[in-house]
Image (cartoon, rainbow, N blue to C red; front, side, top):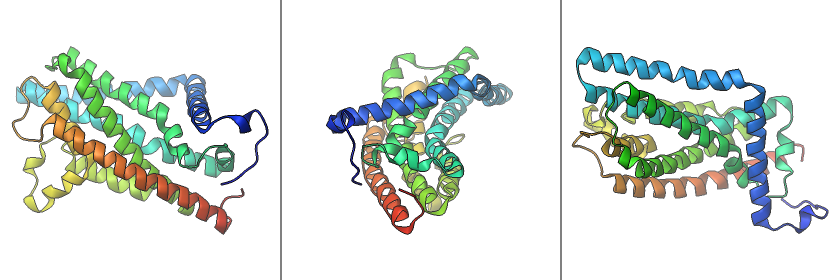
Length: 275
């Protein structure tokens, strides 16, 4: 991508351009949040109901640990959902309204766009997960608050992994106008194989290995080890899960950003994009 830009934009370094681009997308999201406050309020209010559901299930089973077990899995899954779908939703929205090209004329590498677009939704996903944990704690879930810093670090690395998967889905949107197959396939796999509501040890051995390809499983297992007063005996240690997640994020981001950049260039060559 080579376009000519006049001063002062042309004289800014790549690092400054990248920061300005990220800040601009965050400002856009903040404007949208202010424009539609009811949507924001309802999004957070909606996560109260699953917490209540798991609370009553735990009460029915007379097992406080069961409530904390399901609460942590559900909060991680809910928090990750924004990171998985934010980029594809925004790109599809832009394509439908013919404004996608305006995102691509920024004087920064195209590979930066998925990262910049997902910053705010990554923050809101983290806040949503924390809100669910805090609300569950008020209902009686035993949470080890001293482990919050490491639990937050694990969650943020998991968010990065979900962003990488969302970038792959965005590549499909650029070329085929649809990103649902990738997100839908991953969401189904994460829901069944990620251990959201049950330990992956109950899965048949012939499919259990697939759960180790799903970042959700590492994050949920690590969060339970860190946050539950009486964590499950099975599962990897939080530090090992963090190391695996970091490696997964680096590899998947490298693949996802490369595919995204090449998809844009191919779309430009085929005339799908008008730039």
